[in-house]
Image (cartoon, rainbow, N blue to C red; front, side, top):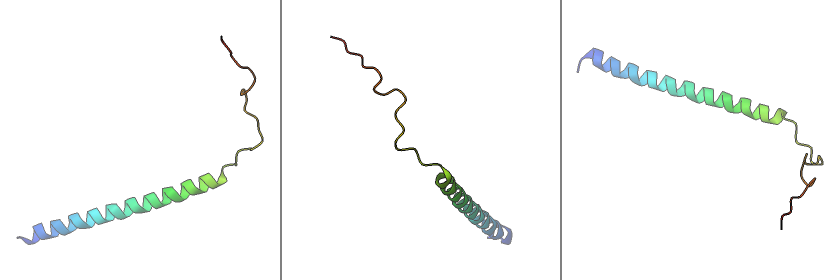
Length: 61
């Protein structure tokens, strides 16, 4: 095994490790941003009526 082939394998492993770390960091950042966005959303009003429910009923014999 030559020196350049051993270094090539190490470089490949290092590149793979760096890509995984970047992916993990990006996923953590996106998860945190999604959590903040969900917390900022206004809670739905519990007492607001449905816009059309119960207005009319279709009955066919």
